[in-house]
Image 1 (spheres, helix red, strand yellow):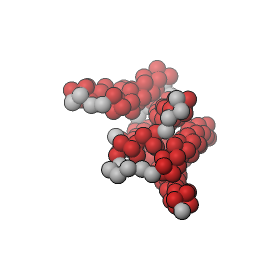
Image 2 (cartoon, helix red, strand yellow; image 1 turned 90 degrees about the horizontal axis):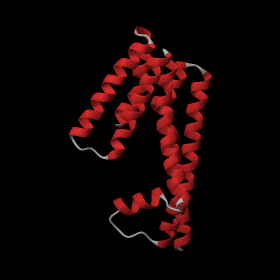
Image 3 (tube, one colour; image 1 turned 45 degrees about the horizontal axis):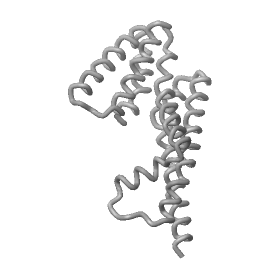
Image 4 (tube, helix red, strand yellow; image 1 turned 120 degrees about the vertical axis):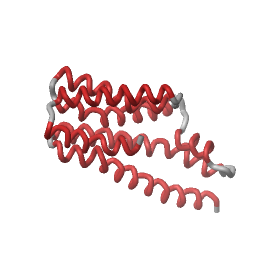
Length: 179
């Protein structure tokens, strides 16, 4: 899924040199529908369907509107989806980083680690909000090349920097509270 998300914007850009929005919309609709069928056949998790449905939705809009810009909304909608998920967890007073760490970590978390992970949910909420704002900015800018750079690798850089800062702060906070 990450490879597809990374290649989506460059593929849209490359196709836009040779085809119009309706043709690209039809092609992406076909590939998204095929992807959904394969996910259904292989009984994939519900989360696996999110990206193909977003691309399917945007491809329909590109076909109907005859505008290539409709295809630029797919990464934005994915970003909004993750932002909304984090908002729902916040409303429920839950933490995705805490739950994910508990699920995948083998050893027991200390109390200071649990508190930090609970609070780091807000850090990721902020990161997702910035990511969504940057997607909106690059779409509004109207420069397809800049949009491609951000939608394919820019957001990875944002999340890489964010996780690095989060880990450093986590180590410092947990160490301080462990002393």
